Length: 329
Image (cartoon, rainbow, N blue to C red; front, side, top):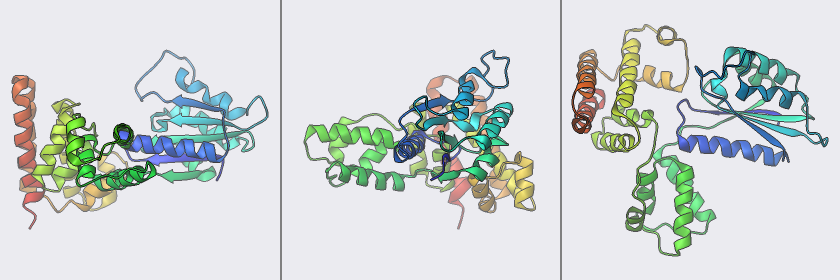
């Protein structure tokens, strides 16, 4: 494996994907026998710390880390988390340093949920290796859970797996913690025991809800809605729905994929490809009705008492499932 590695994950990665990406990064450092690792957490775009230089203060330490190795002669490590948030000037400086980095002095791993700002993204692809982490689904999280239980020499009985997924979603870090707690009890692990012991709901990104809506399964979508509202505000979810409708409208009107992507802003990724492939699944009349419903829901959420918000979102969810998927026959 090369000394420069990119861990590439999905945009809007949830806690499960982030945990997998960071685990992959630490595995690389262990494999290459790197003990001295400096970690940089890139702040989101739009934040400023008053620095006058080309790099924000939180990112500045990447410069010496890439220019020199360990003081003891061994290779040092640099872990850059949320590299997708690097600013243009920062990406330019770091790209030059990466291109000149001594592989015998430093091992650098960039963890990114989405595309990395140019020119760094292109430089990383040309000089280093890339490890891809796909979105976690209930199925892949279930497979991870079964394997994790085997590693702990645990046996999950009956519907214990589905109960754990219902409680923690695709957050594999929380699933692992739940297994550790269950293991310490020494009891038989059943779905009933899981439900009785863990009463939290998973904190998952909005795309999980949108996937359920697109499938037309209102039962699944309502469960995802319940999960989201345990941690997030309905207006945040409404913004995601509005963005999805906008993209579907652009896709329906575009003659080809490139035109659609350019009109949306130029990004070309898995999410865009999925919307493009589904462009004929929702009728124009249904898109129009969905846009009207979202506008009415937005007005209601901003003017009506909070107690009525959940009912509004539930009704909107059921209607969206009908418009998105229920009429595909």
